[in-house]
Length: 153
Image 1 (spheres, rainbow, N blue to C red):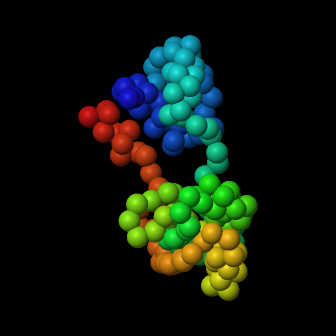
Image 2 (image 1 turned 120 degrees about the horizontal axis):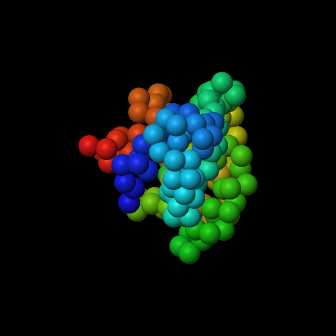
């Protein structure tokens, strides 16, 4: 669980990830040591996992996003996910319930490039079947703000 101060700190870092501890303490109205201790505790608990830059993949030339559901051979999740991790365009892999075994998010430059990426995926030995959907838009981007704001209510 995170408390109100943790939520305020995480919202601040979400909005401005390059802020230093001193500036965070100034904006939150608490001691520098308090902010550092909170950040250390959040990292130790695995809540705060890092400070990667936010990247626009379309601006980098990867304007197409697709999701693929993979059916794989029983007991082969680990080797399949390891091989998926070797494909640079595979951005996420989730083990799922339901129709498929894995849900992957991939990016590509265009439809031909997507075909190349999907061909690499289906060449993995234990992948039995795939079903791919192209994302037309992202009306709600990945977010955590509403969860943090709920703590402040």
